[in-house]
Amino acid sequence: MSGATEPNSQCPILKATNYTVWAIRIKTILEANGLWETIEPTENTQTDFKKDKATIAYLFQAIPNDVVLQVANFKTTKEIWENLKTRHVGVDRVQKARWHTLLSEFELIQIREDDTIDSFTTKINSVVTRASELGTTLSQPTLVRKLLNVVPDKFTQIVASMEQYSDLETMTLEEAVGRLKTFEERLKQKKGIPGESQDKLMFTHHDNNSGRGRQYGNCGHGRFNQPRGNW
Image 1: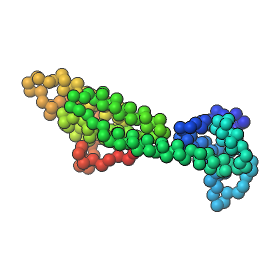
Image 2: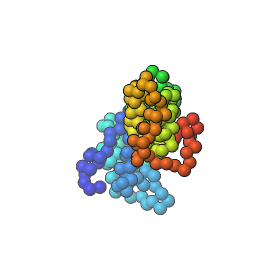
Image 3: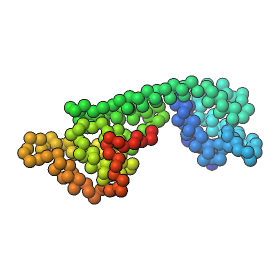
Image 4: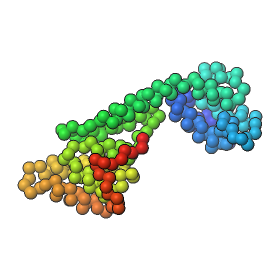
């Protein structure tokens, strides 16, 4: 530690609803300062009372005053940590249950034929925001695949082009939405004009973006048989 005030500037405060994220952040801080071994010692770890007291100082900066009073009688960092974990295990289970419910909701999101790309993006962002409140995230590839798998049939050709010529593992949701919105606007502009087909629109769009995409040797992961991304 570089000084007595350092824990106060670094440590997040434990609340009733943030134990999982709090524990991750505190563990990272302790690891960065060579103190995590006081909680999870290895076979070669020797008792170091100075390190243990330093770790307790970090924890006391990261928990509310009433909780400090409740754990003050414990002698070691490990005892304090285990007590805090036990206190919040019920909350953690509730968080996990909420997360699974949110995943189910995410799976069921669909786009109706009369929905716009913007309206669907709003639905996805709502789930992303609630996931972050639970201390969890949905990866960009997962969000992109969800979007491409549920868009109406009128987007089939542009989706196929994106899957063939772009790397969906590095594409962001924002980029995917931008391409679909561009195609959506062109459909609106060309609707009803003789000779303007979806094929022509798709190839025009591809020509404009050919410098940005990458062709893959294995292009057999189309819209309807693409494997699900990791959560």
